[in-house]
Amino acid sequence: MISYIEFKEKLLPEGCFSIHQARAFFPTFDRNNLKRWMDKGLLIRLRQEWYAFPEMLQRPDFSRYIANRIYRPSYISLHTALSLYGMIPEAVTDITSVTTLKTARFENPFGQYAYQNIKQELFFGYKPVPLPANKAFANSPQQSWLLAHPEKALLDLLYLYPFYDNEEELLQLRLDEDFMAGELNLERLHEYLDKMKNKALDLRIAKILKIYNL
Image (cartoon, rainbow, N blue to C red):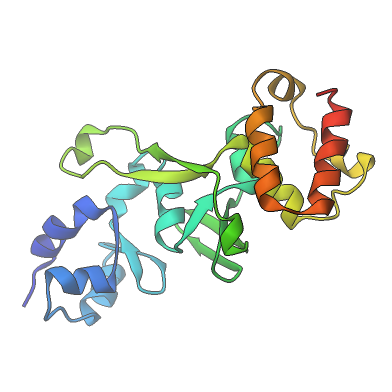
């Protein structure tokens, strides 16, 4: 019988893990152990088939790392990404992502996760962000989470929420003027816009650029 200590020693460096990963380490693993360990507070269920150890609640940015892991492929975008870049003033409760899978929502002790479906050909424009180094997790491999570039986060939002189609609605976004004037990469914005090949989106971006005199 596999002990919890042995199990944790193998899987803690993974950060979070699926039942399939558990069985890769322990081919005879009995999944009933998971329920027993959760009942004792020794494991956290993230969603069906996915788990983490309670220690990870203290790890900086780990909630963002989970977003990519428990529903793949996905990258953080939309309101969460815009908030992280300081492009919108609101604090965002959900961790919002885009995915080529179906639209979904999950909630666990690490946060609330919302995923919007996007076409496979539009799944681009993101970068890896390393988790901060932490002495408590020195034995873990370098891990990272995927974040949309600010230009792609804006394009994803305007593509997936088509009601942002007039000046009044676009102003409601309250995009940060300093970011728009100084940090938005217009060359990248137009490169990504051309790849998305969407005339309605072209018009929305043209209106945004006019509003901010770009």
